Length: 305
Image (cartoon, rainbow, N blue to C red; front, side, top):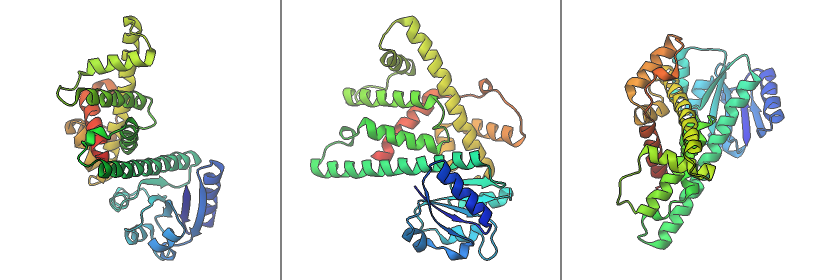
């Protein structure tokens, strides 16, 4: 992965370079001390996958520079000591991926850049799958789309969505992916003539497959553990979307996913909790696992269809 750093402070540029290289996140392909020194063509020439840019610079600030980079295909991470909600919201509305606050925290930088890096790799994977499906479709004529889905494409698409939802690092995402793969196999075998299996059946089948046994006591124990892992992962997605909504109500990910994956009343409730800095317990939040899983499955299919 290739990074370009734009910041008027040479110490910050040096610090970010060392963090990127020491954490083996990729290479720094260039630096600039002001936004006026870069444009889309220059970043394309540098083959920069990720642009790290300071908000405040003497000649052209980060907001104005990002506004001038609308055709830039890479990802943008903004860095600043300013924590104004209005300015952060404007930055997100222009398409930045994340906002890192100064003073620079090494662990925060690594965490954010790993997430952005993973998102880029997932997008590249999905684009490759889409190209493959397009070729298959062209060669096969009128073959149904369902027949060219593969577990790999469903899984890659799901991982992209889970990353978008801010929950990819949660252990419950592995359980969700296992459930999606089971649904994919089930749908291929049933040819679409039957209703989807119940959530209870899906949990059971996935647990049996994972354990390699159908002994009731062991399967029930695994199901209970999986349910808790999945609830925690979904709760993390709810918190992530609520946080995006608080920062910028028009954030595209918030607009696309909040009401699709969740009951919006629960999203608003979580937003109020975050805004008032109230600690809350997950059990007080209504989480519809069945809705979340089926929406995830259908959205994963749609994105590779």
